[in-house]
Length: 146
Ligand SMILES: N[C@@H](CCC(=O)N[C@@H](CS)C(=O)NCC(=O)O)C(=O)O
View 1 (spheres, rainbow, N blue to C red):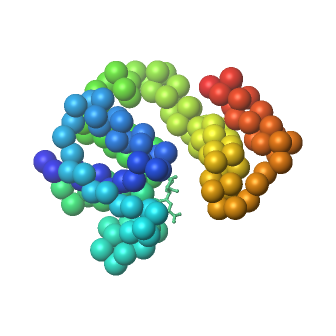
View 2 (view 1 turned 120 degrees about the vertical axis):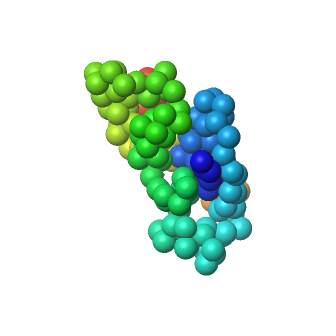
Protein backbone atom coordinates (compact mmCIF):
# COMPACT_ATOMS: atom_id res chain seq x y z
CA UNK A 1 0.00 0.00 0.00
CA UNK A 2 1.59 3.25 -1.10
CA UNK A 3 0.77 6.46 0.70
CA UNK A 4 1.98 9.66 -0.90
CA UNK A 5 1.87 12.92 1.00
CA UNK A 6 2.00 16.18 -0.94
CA UNK A 7 3.04 18.91 1.45
CA UNK A 8 5.12 21.94 2.29
CA UNK A 9 6.28 22.31 5.89
CA UNK A 10 5.52 26.04 5.68
CA UNK A 11 1.85 25.03 5.69
CA UNK A 12 0.23 24.32 9.07
CA UNK A 13 -2.19 21.61 7.84
CA UNK A 14 0.72 19.96 6.01
CA UNK A 15 2.71 19.89 9.24
CA UNK A 16 -0.24 18.26 11.00
CA UNK A 17 -0.15 15.28 8.65
CA UNK A 18 3.62 15.11 8.43
CA UNK A 19 3.97 15.01 12.24
CA UNK A 20 1.04 12.58 12.59
CA UNK A 21 2.57 10.08 10.16
CA UNK A 22 6.02 10.41 11.70
CA UNK A 23 4.58 9.97 15.23
CA UNK A 24 2.71 6.87 14.04
CA UNK A 25 5.96 5.53 12.47
CA UNK A 26 4.18 5.22 9.13
CA UNK A 27 6.22 5.27 5.97
CA UNK A 28 5.04 7.52 3.22
CA UNK A 29 6.35 8.80 -0.06
CA UNK A 30 7.37 12.39 0.39
CA UNK A 31 6.06 14.72 -2.31
CA UNK A 32 7.34 18.20 -1.57
CA UNK A 33 5.37 20.99 -3.20
CA UNK A 34 7.28 24.25 -2.67
CA UNK A 35 4.62 26.93 -2.24
CA UNK A 36 7.26 29.71 -2.33
CA UNK A 37 8.27 28.54 -5.82
CA UNK A 38 4.63 28.29 -6.92
CA UNK A 39 4.94 24.54 -7.51
CA UNK A 40 1.28 24.11 -6.47
CA UNK A 41 0.30 25.91 -9.70
CA UNK A 42 2.19 23.44 -11.90
CA UNK A 43 0.27 21.26 -14.36
CA UNK A 44 1.62 18.17 -12.61
CA UNK A 45 0.26 19.17 -9.19
CA UNK A 46 -2.99 20.57 -10.62
CA UNK A 47 -3.69 17.06 -11.94
CA UNK A 48 -3.43 15.85 -8.32
CA UNK A 49 -5.45 18.69 -6.77
CA UNK A 50 -7.34 21.01 -9.05
CA UNK A 51 -7.76 23.59 -6.25
CA UNK A 52 -3.94 23.76 -6.04
CA UNK A 53 -3.49 23.53 -2.29
CA UNK A 54 -1.53 21.34 0.11
CA UNK A 55 -1.80 18.96 1.91
CA UNK A 56 -3.04 16.12 -0.28
CA UNK A 57 -2.69 12.37 0.06
CA UNK A 58 -2.73 9.74 -2.65
CA UNK A 59 -3.42 6.34 -1.13
CA UNK A 60 -3.23 3.69 -3.83
CA UNK A 61 -4.77 6.13 -6.28
CA UNK A 62 -7.39 7.48 -3.85
CA UNK A 63 -6.73 11.22 -3.71
CA UNK A 64 -7.94 13.24 -0.75
CA UNK A 65 -7.57 16.89 0.25
CA UNK A 66 -8.42 18.75 3.48
CA UNK A 67 -6.27 17.88 6.47
CA UNK A 68 -9.18 17.08 8.80
CA UNK A 69 -10.76 14.69 6.29
CA UNK A 70 -7.32 13.13 5.79
CA UNK A 71 -6.77 12.63 9.55
CA UNK A 72 -10.11 10.78 9.76
CA UNK A 73 -9.37 8.70 6.66
CA UNK A 74 -5.97 7.66 8.07
CA UNK A 75 -7.69 6.65 11.31
CA UNK A 76 -10.47 4.66 9.64
CA UNK A 77 -7.83 2.89 7.53
CA UNK A 78 -5.90 2.14 10.75
CA UNK A 79 -2.87 3.96 9.36
CA UNK A 80 -2.71 6.01 12.55
CA UNK A 81 -3.34 4.34 15.93
CA UNK A 82 -6.41 4.66 18.10
CA UNK A 83 -4.39 6.68 20.61
CA UNK A 84 -4.23 9.51 18.04
CA UNK A 85 -7.87 9.29 16.92
CA UNK A 86 -10.05 7.33 19.37
CA UNK A 87 -12.73 4.85 18.33
CA UNK A 88 -14.88 5.53 21.40
CA UNK A 89 -17.64 7.79 20.13
CA UNK A 90 -17.49 10.40 22.89
CA UNK A 91 -13.70 10.64 22.84
CA UNK A 92 -13.79 10.83 19.05
CA UNK A 93 -16.42 13.58 19.24
CA UNK A 94 -14.06 15.58 21.50
CA UNK A 95 -11.27 15.28 18.93
CA UNK A 96 -13.71 16.23 16.14
CA UNK A 97 -14.89 19.19 18.20
CA UNK A 98 -11.33 20.47 18.34
CA UNK A 99 -10.65 19.75 14.65
CA UNK A 100 -13.76 21.68 13.61
CA UNK A 101 -12.91 24.59 15.92
CA UNK A 102 -9.18 24.92 15.33
CA UNK A 103 -9.14 26.40 11.80
CA UNK A 104 -10.92 29.60 12.77
CA UNK A 105 -10.60 29.34 16.55
CA UNK A 106 -6.83 28.84 16.78
CA UNK A 107 -4.97 28.47 13.48
CA UNK A 108 -6.29 31.73 12.05
CA UNK A 109 -5.14 33.80 15.06
CA UNK A 110 -1.66 32.24 15.13
CA UNK A 111 -1.32 32.79 11.36
CA UNK A 112 -2.51 36.42 11.55
CA UNK A 113 -0.02 37.23 14.29
CA UNK A 114 2.81 35.51 12.42
CA UNK A 115 1.91 37.42 9.26
CA UNK A 116 1.73 40.83 10.95
CA UNK A 117 4.80 40.35 13.13
CA UNK A 118 7.20 38.54 10.76
CA UNK A 119 5.97 38.18 7.17
CA UNK A 120 4.70 41.67 6.40
CA UNK A 121 7.89 43.39 7.69
CA UNK A 122 9.88 41.13 5.34
CA UNK A 123 7.71 42.45 2.50
CA UNK A 124 8.31 46.06 3.59
CA UNK A 125 5.12 46.66 5.62
CA UNK A 126 5.78 47.75 9.19
CA UNK A 127 2.85 47.28 11.57
CA UNK A 128 2.46 49.59 14.58
CA UNK A 129 2.61 48.28 18.15
CA UNK A 130 -1.16 48.63 18.64
CA UNK A 131 -1.90 46.40 15.64
CA UNK A 132 0.66 43.83 16.74
CA UNK A 133 -0.68 43.82 20.31
CA UNK A 134 -4.20 43.33 18.94
CA UNK A 135 -3.16 40.26 16.94
CA UNK A 136 -1.06 38.97 19.81
CA UNK A 137 -3.93 39.29 22.29
CA UNK A 138 -6.27 37.37 19.98
CA UNK A 139 -3.67 34.62 19.59
CA UNK A 140 -3.05 34.40 23.35
CA UNK A 141 -6.80 34.26 24.05
CA UNK A 142 -7.20 31.46 21.49
CA UNK A 143 -4.32 29.54 23.07
CA UNK A 144 -5.92 29.97 26.49
CA UNK A 145 -9.18 28.51 25.18
CA UNK A 146 -7.19 25.64 23.68
N1 LIG B 1 -8.47 23.66 4.92
C1 LIG B 1 -7.33 23.15 4.20
C2 LIG B 1 -6.35 24.29 3.99
C3 LIG B 1 -5.50 24.08 2.73
C4 LIG B 1 -4.68 25.35 2.47
O1 LIG B 1 -5.21 26.47 2.54
N2 LIG B 1 -3.39 25.15 2.15
C5 LIG B 1 -2.54 26.29 1.92
C6 LIG B 1 -1.27 26.17 2.75
S1 LIG B 1 -1.65 26.25 4.47
C7 LIG B 1 -2.13 26.33 0.44
O2 LIG B 1 -1.89 25.33 -0.17
N3 LIG B 1 -2.05 27.56 -0.10
C8 LIG B 1 -1.63 27.78 -1.44
C9 LIG B 1 -2.40 28.92 -2.07
O3 LIG B 1 -3.40 29.36 -1.48
O4 LIG B 1 -2.00 29.36 -3.14
C10 LIG B 1 -6.70 22.00 4.98
O5 LIG B 1 -6.91 21.92 6.20
O6 LIG B 1 -6.04 21.14 4.37
